[in-house]
Amino acid sequence: MGSRVGELPPETQRDVDSVARVVAAGFQGGEWAQLAAELHLYAYKTLHRKMRQSSELMELVAPSETPLVLSDDERSALHSSFDDRADIATKTLREAMRTFPQALKRGTYNPAANPGKNGKYKALPSFFVGRCGLHFPRAFAEWRRERTDRFVERANEHKRGWILSDVVHQTAGEPDGHVSDDVTSFYFTLTAMIDDLRPRNRAVWRMTLEGCSRGEIAEQLEIKLGDVDNALYTFRSKVKALRREGNLIVPPTIEAEWARSKPVDTPSDGAGR
Image 1 (tube, helix red, strand yellow):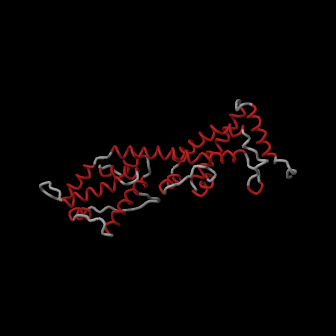
Image 2 (cartoon, one colour):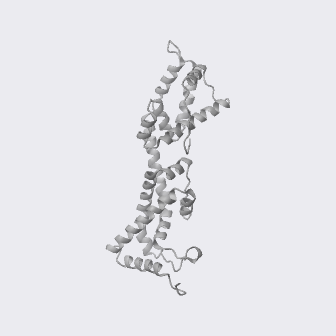
């Protein structure tokens, strides 16, 4: 049986009454603790689901004053990494729950005055998820900074340009240890290209040049093996493209070494410079 004109559906009225009681109690006591726990759990699961679908996530954050722009690498992380989604969801919920009592005290949850789509009244859990959407871009920015800083730190730990110099030295094939100008120039070009990569891929390549295995890199950077493969494949593809275009000249001695120990390039899902 439908509600009479001017009346809220019973389930919506229960939400309104519950909000009125916890506001009157100053957000103290068991009812608020129970309500907060239920909202937290509902929003946590919902955020996980929406982060896996970029279109749903963008719809959620659209009302936020803080824009959200995702790189391909970040979209891949949100889709595939439970740990990253959990981290971002926790950050978002922490801020949303901190500000929620004040929002309720201001009467922000007022389904009678603000019916949802097609006149359907918004349930309190859905309203709270909407509040999470307002905070999500800032929580995501915090996660991005921490994630980038972690990769930057790892990359800087392996910032040993002489390792690449040794690689060039070994492939130069000069018995007296002399490295020709074209090989030296090539070395500096590759070093600059690696230094220009995104922090994660820069760390992958510096660790590769230091002799770390793909598995060791994945473990130390706390990323998937496929992400390591993508970093290696993407950079090699860029080098190949520059060579085809004539914008990167590979010295004959290094060309011969590459031909002798040619790696098998196999991209995984997702990529990024």
